[in-house]
Image (cartoon, rainbow, N blue to C red; front, top):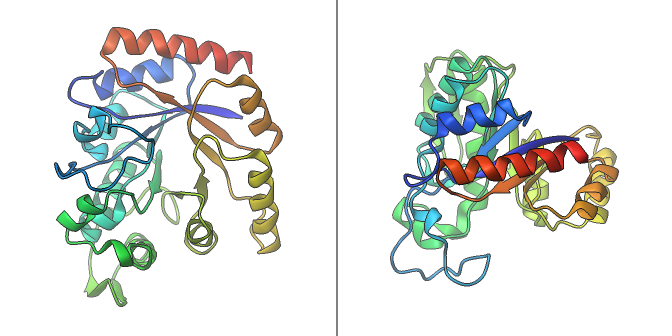
Length: 275
């Protein structure tokens, strides 16, 4: 089982290039960055974690800019979004951003996506929360068309465009792996139909991981990689994840200034070595 880091990179925490170097130096294989373009001040949607929404949610750097900075100073670190809120993004711009990052990094992108939870944030981007699932399914199909065809077009209910040219194409073929976050039936169906890997959150029961693995195998997809997103330090649970066939665990790294971040990374690296 491999170990990576998931975190929020903000304007008041460690800079992404320094973080990328530190991860590679300590043997972590990946960096997954969260995305929130903004947080509406109304705060109608409850924070899924309970209580007040942590400040890091509305100080988050653009993940592709931050990952490009990390790419420039690393050689092997996988560069992931955990997760990109695709339903709030312009599709064609996003296709270009992902492909550009894959090109400059030499093929190290893992594109993690999700439908999000903050309905006010979605509405500010012109997205109807009620149709976000159907929207992202079409977006994923359209992205693959842009990445794999010289002249791409897509005609759906939510996404519609006539033939376009769009380069660069990703280095990875046929395209960077797409991982989906979420554990709902809709998310699992999206995993089966559209995605290359799964990002279940910490706390997902190991028995549920085994059930999903068996279900995917029954559908003809036995080798889908699983990456646990945002894990803590429960050694017993981490061992159970390994026994359940998890390919990677990403520890949730608190957002702190550089010195405090490096200290925490040393602790997590020691835990990973012990496992």
